[in-house]
Length: 284
Image: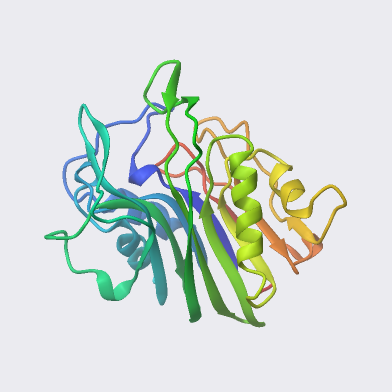
């Protein structure tokens, strides 16, 4: 199976120097759909996905991506509900707290729907079961580099989410998890360990796909602990920034899948996002 992860930056295109450009006139679904279709993935985790946001044309981006890759099942998890408002930034919606799962039966148009930001997991294989985990935000802000902004920007963390699916693979059932962890050092490691504990009752092999905001070998080290363990890092290649990758924030991690069994790995450039997708052929 071709499995991957992609932080899509709400489908935003970037210039060659990494600066974002305004959404082009016309169909707001097209750039995201084109990028996802080109990946030809059987299982794909997406991060920074919009649902009914003004900035991305009031579309359900998870549904757009699912249609583009011919997914037979998918779920979107809202990490936070609210709107992005020009000049004000993110405005949370206190009436819709917590993480929620949305799927194919929830595509009903933007009218009356609570807009949100979150992650998605899309599958071309049948899925037996789904579950969602809310991850609390870090209590302290952190200076960050933000696409389109000069210098460092003091940024507050947001709630995060993880989505798990028990997938019918070609070799039997396995568990896949889409996740997007905090950018705050230490807090993201804590969240990763929480996800590991959360899936212990689900079928093996276990596969984690996502933007961990942890570089290089750190996610594997967090999962295995100081004494080592069974978790493997299946794809080691830089994914950020997209125009000139220097570090790897995006990871494919597994327990029960040997590194020697991994096929082709790639991190192709697409027409959107400040991250490159990360994909690998896996024996699942």
